[in-house]
Image 1: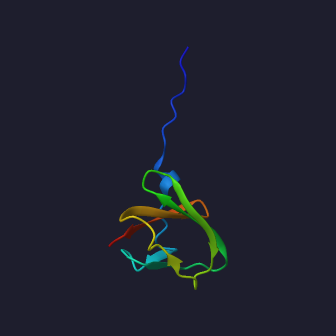
Image 2: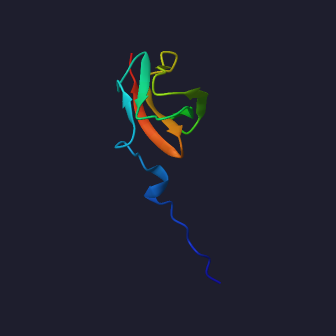
Length: 88
């Protein structure tokens, strides 16, 4: 019998940068998310998918990323992923 093949679609990783923007990006110390209208639970996710930190923020709250190693990360919230770069 034939089994259906499920392919991971690109809709899983929609960036939605038109709605929200991380700035400054890249950054060495703090980032903010422009476009948040209300308090949101966010997660910092490593490039490999590891959950690093979870917190509740508003658009006014700077997010401290100074403790992260240099590299590429994602902010995950509302089922969206926003990429950012941590620099020295």
